[in-house]
Amino acid sequence: MPNYSDLTTTIAAQAKAREDALPVRNESCRSKFLFHRTPTQKVCLFFHGFTGYPNQFLPLGKALFEQGYNVLIPLMPGHGQAGNWNRDRPTPLPTDPKVYQDFALHWIQQAKALGQQVVIGGLSGGGTLCAWVALEHRTLIDRALLFAPYLSGNSITDKLFIKLSNSYYGWGGNPELAIGYTSFQVPALRLFLDLGTQLLKRARKAPAAPMFLFSTEIDDSVDTNDHKAFFADALKLQPKCWYHCFDRSYKVPHTMMTIGEGNRWEGILNFMVKAYVGGDLTWTEVEEIGFRLTQGKTFPAIVAELGLSKRVSPDLPAMITMMDKAAIVQSRNPSSLDTDA
Image (cartoon, rainbow, N blue to C red):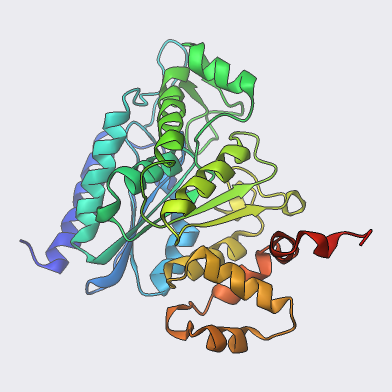
């Protein structure tokens, strides 16, 4: 086995050589690596979105690097390639899920050599890939972060179109100015729809690695009701699963990772991720903290009462402020918010 310094140098050099040979569209599409000088307790591995690019995870990656973790953000298969793509010369995106699955397992093995525990995360199609790992290879990772995972389309019409069409589709916008791709063959997206359907069923009967799933109420690409169902099923078999859906008032888009792609609450999202990655609480314990806060107790006092000090991340208070604590109270006492009572 090469030593740690040689390994990190080789990983970066091999990625650069691959991407020089493509070549890539621009620097935002290049794989990004943030390595400490020695192995770290946790290594964070991120998979960007369908038609997206590695820079989608750079702000979060930097935040976790500052927490002391190594970070890898590889370019996904078929993505980020320079070219004049159109209906006659379509973007070279995979249509076989095994291409992505083999890619994920390869990078997890790379990450395992750089630290003690591997945390994976992904946006949209990348989130679907993370969910697959969490359910089918849960022992390989410590936990997974699913950002608006593509488990199904936003509407029946979307689902039927993606399921049945073999056409070439454009997101819109100027492809010359876009960072990632603006068009794709529908079968390249269909593989995530099919995989998501399988995962929704799988979560009902198979335990997963701990997962934190993020949704947003204004998502126009995926079905947040399926997110909620997926979380509810996963939680029954894995108590360390968490869930958060951004209220529509925050106007968080499907591309939720950066300010540049429309999420002005990028910093809050990063705090919530750090609360999960840096702690070790069950969802029941998180809700209990939220419930006791409604009773006028302070966060430090609650943590001490529950004996959770050693398992709570310093970033958890930011996470708790985003929770719907009124809903927690109502779930425990349905009549508590009844105005006629």
